[in-house]
Picture 1 (tube, rainbow, N blue to C red):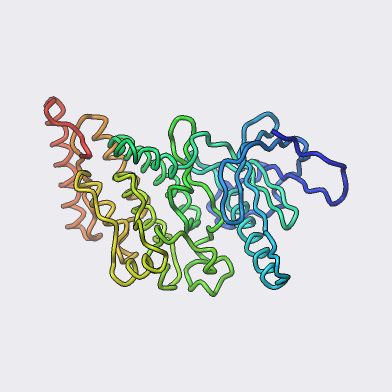
Picture 2 (picture 1 turned 30 degrees about the vertical axis):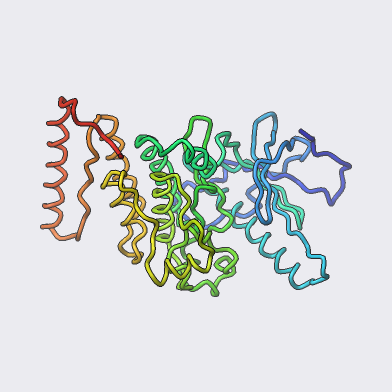
Length: 370
């Protein structure tokens, strides 16, 4: 592990440590700026082996003040053909990604959202230092599980619940992730999942219009094609419901351990999803309640996709069923706000609870996701 040091000069990059006293305690959704971060000497930061890499970034193991951290380094690589205009565009995109991730993370604090430690910026290189998640990405975990078979139902619900809680919090803060996928979900040492990589995120107030109306909503800043909602392909702008669609695909992956739309290129997936309403095939061995939730999440109409608050409630219900050794009993899905619908919904929930209680002593009944 190498220590970053060097001669002190006015051009030396400074690590900015998050001052937790500046976290917003109200409901204001505005992003923080860099003035809310206190400068820290880079000599306290050690960078070790590479964990992962992307088009413009790499993530490394690190230590900051003797605490394990993850160090994400974004670099705007310049081209070799002296195309100054292309280089300027690339630098702008990398800087925009850095600013978006830092400004949003510095306002967030939740057990299921990765915690920001500090930042460093000296264009064209930008650093984002976060808590270390030793379990790696959910994507890597699923790839390993693919060889040994599907996940146990308890793990499916537990991981999905972690992600849903993190996303419920982001949406409550007005943040749209826009690139929710297993490789952007990290696991801690105990197997709990946290939402990470907010570089393509934006405030919902700036995402509601078409992409071209806001720099942060440009084509290059939208999600990954396998997990993108139909409206994103159609260039109709996006709101928080695009994250619900992506979550549906992630939940499908938890039940199958497979990659969606294998063997298809981005153009083929875009056409299939947006023009033919194609979705990955549901697992016949998965519990009907989970498959039904998946289908509602990736509905073609954003308005019919559930809010994450509803998803959390349903998954908490399934978790209770599994812990009690009971079959998965879905909560009543509210059809409208009419008094009659509310009464029928309350009756259905009470009936489900009564059924659950009557089956507690019946050891022949087991909760399952076959």
